[in-house]
Image (cartoon, rainbow, N blue to C red; front, side, top):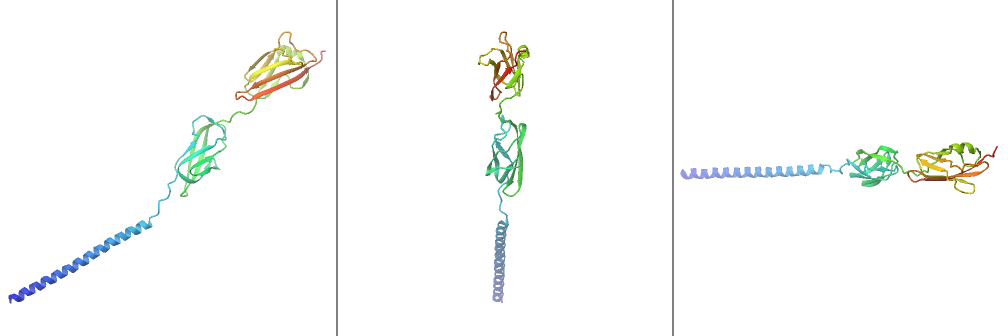
Length: 244
């Protein structure tokens, strides 16, 4: 009887161990599959994520920089953006270049407080813009001064010498000038009238003994220049009227 009971005990123990082993195997395999599934899900999520595109530009710097001295209206600007872009316009006109470096020569109005209106198309298709300034725009003066009014004109005839001897010559210009004005006779001799060039006016004042005579050819030689150095070199020839 004892032997039978002992034999039964060992049989039940073996059955319990077998059941536990099977349960362990099933649980372990299931856990492994869960890990594999998680890994696969992570891989799939990584595959589905959209690749990150190039960053958009957010600012631009120009050379020459604003706030400096005067610049001409046709200045060529170099534009440096903080990221590469596909296209750039300046004041509505297309710039040339690529990536983050572009050039443009927009026509600017003269005067202080002028700006560059820079717009660009980012590589992701979005738009950006910025105002760069202010600039003080002034073109170089290349125009010579001109006479706007004078006591005599070139090729004038029958000029009355009396009022000129009394009041002298006066010539007005369209801008301030410096230089000389000289009165000569028909032989080219300097009559040494007193000359004054001040502001936008030049005058000649008669000298005793060197007054204008009737029926005589004279020349007024004007050699002046404006502040930018543009010269006016002209000679006005006139003839006084006969003596009455």
